[in-house]
Image 1 (cartoon, rainbow, N blue to C red):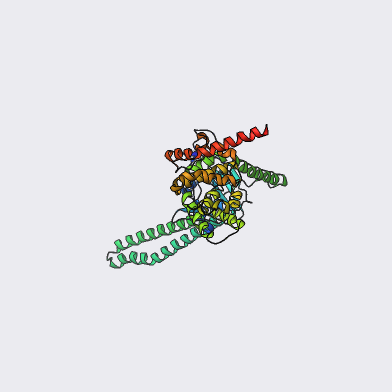
Image 2 (cartoon, rainbow, N blue to C red):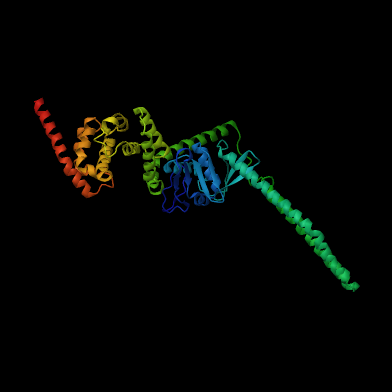
Length: 443
């Protein structure tokens, strides 16, 4: 997939914009309490934004109110729960707005500057501005914690280097003294002693220089000059209020961006979201089949269907497919299964679109799942019609090929469709004639 412009809550439409990043790719794994969303290309995203994958992952966790974790060994970024890819892309835009873009020039050329344990600044490499980060965001706690850990690690490495050099010093002195004992020429001995003194002096100077470098690197924030950070940041009540209003504006813009980018992100989600819907539906059908093996109330059945659909992170519309697949068998007519489960279906089929889906599932059931019922398709459909689960207008509309194509199951072939249409013709004629007779009676 092609890269997109690095933009915050305000889109950048320039096709020649040189700051690019890959589009976020999400994958939902697991089900039930173990369901989680994996950001497949977290490392690539972080590299493009010059941030760490752990930071990006933590931001998703704080924004979505879920536990999140980045494993450096496997380069795997995980957020607990099932989240739509379009929403995560919008949250990424908010992250870019708050923690990547320069507030002054709006270019993604910033790096963090830390002041003690209380303040973080954006240092822009493009325009040179130094602007404070919104410290009210939960991610700043994580950033300061990570920065403190890195400083401690640097100090630890420095101390280790000092110890190694001290351990080596006696050995070096012994090695240096060895030639003196073996030397018999006084002039040569004096020359070597001078050389040794010079080498020791150079070693001492080099050691002191390295120690100063280590201390300078570990205490980078303490040794920063006043030129690195604008200490004249206005802390007056008016300035603080202005920054608060700016933070609120960014938050509002982030929400607007989520809505504005929903359509585009939804298209990307269809291309990239890797979830085995068919496998999840089949698993849910098995669970409902087991659930129906003992008598249940209509309300209990409906609640269980909803629970299975939710746990499998499936669309709401798939509730009907789950229940239909579990409730109806080859004995649908002989055991009166339509009448038995009519009230559950009534709760599941609450729109014209779902009525069309119910007819499509019936077609697939009679033509593919139980081929012996192909010619009984109109009988099954009339059973649904008699229970007021499908309306007359919906059935008549289904007989129009153009309408049927919009809803038919993909496993129902053209041959199946022709046979089903032929079998359905008498029922369609009956409905049309019944409507004409009703009109005549009204006159």
